Image (cartoon, rainbow, N blue to C red; front, side, top):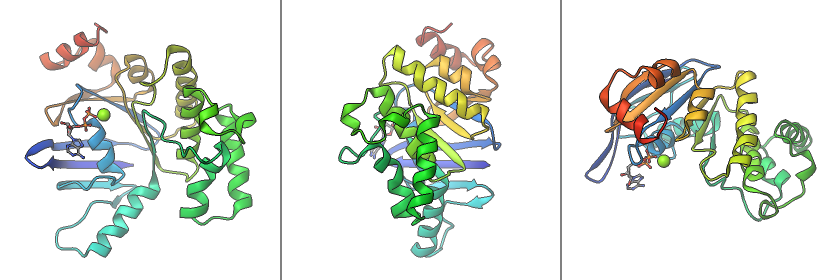
Length: 250
Ligand code: ADP
Ligand code: MG
C-alpha cells in the first residue's frame, strides 16, 4: 500500500528526516512513536504532500507521489494531488470548519474537491456519522460538541473521500480519558474493517492496540521497528528502552 524509501526533509539548516524507510501493507495499522520534535508530524505531512520532501521516494498504491528530478511542476502537482486525494488526515486538534455543521464538514471535500453528486455523498455521510455514533448530531456546529465528538466527526470527514490510507497525528492527545475511549473505539472498529492506518501517538495503549507494526523514530531515522510485542516488551536498542521508560510504560 505504501512504500517510503530514504525520505529526507530539512527546514533551513535543520535536518528533520534523514532517510526514513517504511513499508506498510494494505489493511494493516502502523504506529509511529518517538520523542517530541523527532519528525513524526513532518513524516505524515510528507506522505499526504502537505510538505514537499527533499529527497527519497513515496509510492502509494504502487504509484509514485513524490517528484522525479527534472520533471515539470505540472507533473509534480499531479502527483501531489494524487497523494492528497488518496489519503485522509486526522489532527490532534480536530481542525473542523467552525462555520459548517457536522454534515457540511463531511460533505465539503466530496462535493467541492471530488465534485460527486450531493445525493450520493449525503447518503454516505450519514452512514459515516452512524459509524462514529453521531447521526443525531448532523446539524450541530463543532463548537456545540465535546472534543471526543469533534474528533469522531473529523474521522468521518477524513473517510468521506474514501482514502486508501488514513493518517492520524496524535488523535487522542487533546482528549480526557472518557473521550479518548470513544475515539479509541472508533479506531478499533476501523481496524476491524481493514482500514489501512498510520497513527502517530504518545499513548502506549493506542500504539499497542492499533498496531501491526510499531516504528520508533529517533534522530530523523527509524531507530527500531517491529511488532508491538517486540518493540514494547523486548526492545533491541538502548534508546528505545530509554524512550519507553520516559513514558512510564516499562
Ligand atoms: P514531532 O511531530 O515528532 O514532534 P515535528 O515533525 O513536528 O516533530 O517537528 C520536527 C522538527 O521540525 C522540529 O524541530 C520542528 O520545530 C521542525 N519543524 C516542523 N515543521 C516546521 C516548519 N514548517 N518550519 C520549520 N521547522 C519546522
Ligand atoms: Mg507532532
